[in-house]
Amino acid sequence: MKVLILGSGGREHALAWSVRRSPRVTEVVCAPGNGGIAEVARCVPVDLKDLDAMLRLAEAERPALTIVGPELPLSLGVVDALQQRGFRVFGPTREAAMLESSKAFAKQFMKRNHIPTANYAVCSSPAELEKMIDHFHSPIVIKADGLAAGKGVLICSSRNTALEAAHGLFSGALLGSAEGQVVIEEFLEGEEVSFLCLSDGEHVAPLVPAQDHKRIGEGDTGPNTGGMGVYSTDSILEPGMTEWVLHHIAQPTVRAMAEEGTPFKGVLYVGLMMTARGPEVLEYNARFGDPETQAILMRLESDLVDALEACIDGRLAETELRWSPGAAACVVASSSGYPGSYKTGFPTSGLAAAAQVPGVQVFHSGTSRLGSQIVTSGGRVLGVTAAGDSLQQALARAYQAMAEIQFEGIYYRRDIGHRALKPKG
Ligand code: AMP
Ligand code: GLY
Image (cartoon, rainbow, N blue to C red; front, side):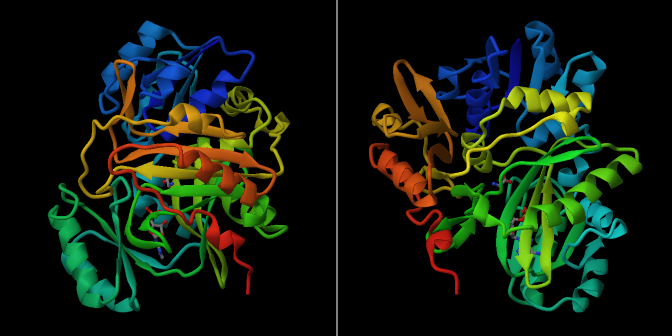
């Protein structure tokens, strides 16, 4: 069968690599893809903001299965549009994807369905926000309602900085376009866990847990990024916690979405904060995480295509996901300057040597091909990912492979997974 993957990042490279391993798959097409994806898939150009272009591509390629990677095409309704034309697509409809594309919707949904999350207020004007803000203690979290590529959350140390941030979101000064709604949220403390599960609209099947490292700097300092590295081990969650999260968060979410007439099929990414009160939802994403997917799929032993098709067909309850018991880790190499402005077009070297390290896959996030060379083309450039029997082994392999790789301005965090290796006390 032919599989079409929409997207161009490390997540899509990992999806293409995993899909390729399925004996049922004969061809993988990725649009638009990147320099590394081109090694495992045929890459074709498409504008992920242009619904008609994506439909034309599907009509031309006639894939048996389409997998949507990023949030933007989901929020535009690419799944609805492709389904209407008879294509089989893995991903939520536009309305179901509102769990991610509108933070106001997500918060109100959680509240009416008793899903644990931080206290909040949704405000539609600066005046309303000024009134509501006195109900919150500092630090105060201010969030844009809409998609903001990781730039829409501001953690503010005082009432004044929170007001300033909210005004910046309402006016458009902060994100470039004005927000109609702004969410004020209570600040939660604890460890973050990325809890992803597949859903067929009724049943859920958890993937292995992962922990992302969102800040650019070592020791979790500096500005937020799309994610600078991630690891996955079963021990991220205490025994029994997977069942608790399924029972109190994931299943109620999927059940309520169905009851409200917007069944959620696809991958539900629950961003959790493990607070002293128990796990609470920081955010939902309606897609695979990036770089979580790179580490998670390294641990998947069963067939990804079978699992995604079971979601489309409502057969998830009969489908078994099998995982390797060890660990996987992904360390992201970024361009100097990221998440601010950065230069691209620098040649890379050492990718082949890196791939020789046992257990390693080098997933490309922002590269392109220039003749025989792979050059940088994004802020996050590579996700050097390794599997191992233990987290120590996976990390050692990822860093050994990373040491082979060079491009001008290469930056990566040297402390991915270190919190998990520290004795708990
Ligand atoms: P989000 O885009 O909602 O995932 O937020 C991005 C990051 O901001 C999260 O991964 C957290 O690190 C942080 N964050 C979001 N909401 C809160 C909150 N209520 N309390 C503390 N940190 C938060
Ligand atoms: N790694 C965070 C995300 O995919 O949203």
